[in-house]
Amino acid sequence: MYLTQGLHRAVQQFPERTAVIDDGLRRDYRTLADRCARLAGALAEAGLKPGDRVAILALNGATHWDYFAGLWWGGFVANPVNTRWSLKEMAYSLADSGARVLLVDDEFLERVPELRQRCPALERIIHVGSEPTPPGLIPYEPWLAAAQAVSDRRADGEELAVILYTGGTTGFPKGVMLSHSNLWSSAVGRLAETEVPSPFVTLMAVPLFHTAGLGKLVSQLIVGGTSVVLPGFRVEKALAAIAREKVTDVILVPSMIQMMVDDPGFAAHDLSALQTVTYGASPMSLPLLERAMAALPGARFMQSYGMTEAAPVITVNPWWNHQGEALRNGRVKSAGRAGWGLEVRIVDESGTELPRGEIGEVIARGDNIMLGYWNQPAQTAEVLRDGWLHTGDGGYMDEGGYIYIVDRLKDMIVSGGENVYCAEVENRLARHPAVVSCAVIGVPHAQWGESVHAVVVLREGARASEAELCDFCRQELAGYKCPRSVEYRDQMPLSGAGKILKNVLREPYWRGRDRRVS
Image (cartoon, rainbow, N blue to C red):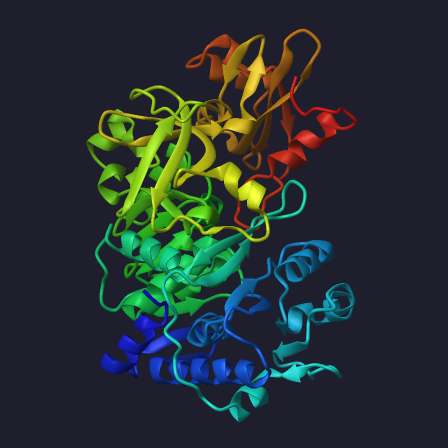
């Protein structure tokens, strides 16, 4: 299935429906299709061939709809650059992918000279924005308007659609290769898990260089929905947009949800149109989930668990597991069951499936699983084995097929010969009324090898001593699992996807050591 199919369907059935809203700009599906055909034509006129890579370095905006759908229209490959990276990381992704063209907005113009120097393969840099176009760059709108529209290539499903570089939290990032079929099957499987309202209006506040945002864009193209795009997540702008545009569907990370429900102006906004809240990227504590559901009683909450390599969904915990008996029996804490079109297993180190309830590695298989890592055959072979994606996540499966993630296996702490799964400790700490967010890491210990260390952010004005937090954990956890030390911070270091960067938290404790475990 080619990813522009939904665009053709929308033009045929409702050409005047709004495809994207970006501040004061509203663009319908007929106009979007024309711009995509012209962008494909402009790139072909520039000498690009199907399979060539084109990058974008820009905050979320309407141009991303031209960019993704236009590249797929012409058979090109998208490389959306992580806007939160350092210049070195940006240059690496451009050079590694061999991108020949870069689209850049006003926000990142000052980085162009250095990127051009570091990436000699870049032949053209297109300026997308309202500021004057610097010498040597091509202004986007005139370039697009002058191009000849071309016919949709209607790419084969197995053709490469996008290279998404992973966060780069350790070493240089890897380029995840996703095909048209990968993205399409993941989006359709996700849509099958819930009702699609009409109109289907989505808030696009998560970054489009991440697979969660890109997957949502693909879903909107498939159903012909309306996307309300924000350049980034700002709680007051998100609340205003949801109310103003009668948004029916949002996908957010838990930290975004917390900022929304904690905002002093929350109650002043009419959010009654909101029907579905999907959260992912990191677990949500039960107290926060309960507060969010109480604040948005008309919305159904659901969780998606996945990773870039799965385009991105692996499991879904549906809305009916966020109410009633599921709140009491603990199923609300699960990451859900295998999504439509997927198989999921829990295996030991040899790849043998484990009995229900035993902790092992989560592996998955389906049409959404990546083609591999760009120019990384050894790392591809390490995670793709016999058709199964090895996630590196530790978890177990209950009798109903529900997956419970306990931790990244590499983040497991071994203290005195006992395994401690950080997520279990974090879930307990998060229930303390004074704790806003927390992370548990292993730090060196002369006697036990590693010691359990908690990093916490407290609510404004709240107090909780180290002894109090440790005693609170001990009420439900074995003694060896409880923190031996507590560090207090004003805020956590976060990745572009909103995940806590545990490598940053570990660094001061393991600096200068050959190994990061004991």
